[in-house]
Length: 260
Image (tube, rainbow, N blue to C red; front, side, top):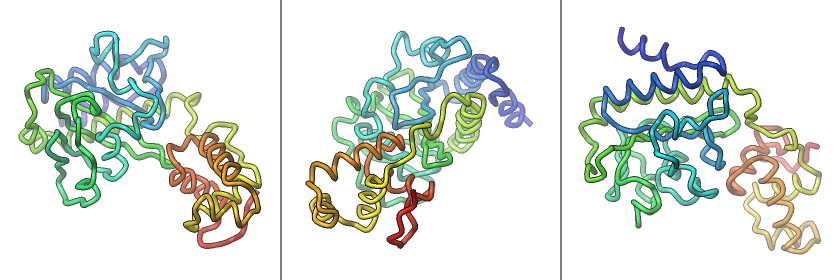
């Protein structure tokens, strides 16, 4: 079966396979939909995919001509409507300045701000595959038309969206597996008692001011501890920090117990 053969070529078995797998991915996508790939293994970080020699996959393989627009901002996950949509959707979708289009209704996507779409999304339209992984890490692969005047991708999405989803997930997940140095959680992720305490109250819906009154510290101190915890957990905002802290057992669900 052609899909199985393609998946075999795309999956990365060792760091030495990264470049050849990326090239296979590129060629399959070009033949299928004639689009350019943009990929990220973690939309929360300004970090590029590289081969075993440290060369950028975006420029050396995917053809972004010296730059990868996906990596143009350290705040990509907060600024781009594409990456914002990836936080609310797990299946492939396509997007342009008029809307986000999926196989099944998703009301969360209706609330995404699409203003200044070209400037913020770095493309005029794209088929996008969110890649959700353990510990709330989200990768994403965007398939972008070479012709910027092409803004309706409904036909390509209907015909190949699910297949592109298989390829994108296989590539990103296997990339993560062969790169143990790319840690889902940094070694410095151990939280202090005060950081856990602040996150626990945040998880219960308390504001910074309310937390400051509860723990008898200033609002600035509360924000400092929550910011530090977010940095340690590689979280893009306090909600994700709370979620990761809960997954790691620092916070008990619906409990006031602090785990350290």
